[in-house]
Length: 151
Image (tube, rainbow, N blue to C red; front, side, top):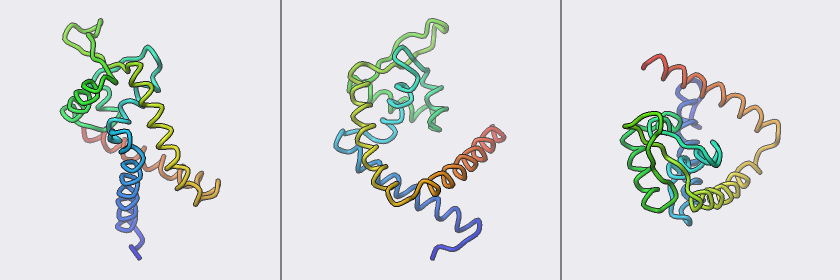
């Protein structure tokens, strides 16, 4: 229906992204967070209990502008789920950390998102999941290389 080849590929990727956005919103809306919010919480949680990252590093990891990341961090800080503190290695720098409340919210969001993911993945068998994951990992690597080449 949507064609094949390069145009079809980007059409399917775009439609997949739209469906994924809708799924993420459905899963996270009851917790009053966006997927961008959850992504910040998840990255900080993944880094470990004592981890702290600069806003610039978070923006790089999450492919966001520094201005957009500042707004996200501001919103999360107002909710008490992240905190900002001085960077001991850079007088002008700031580090962002998860608070205990942030860890709890991250866990609740991860649980809610897992339910939605499982619902979608139930329509695929293990071999399909593996093939799609392999292809998407390669595509992400191509995007990352393109981004490095342009900066």
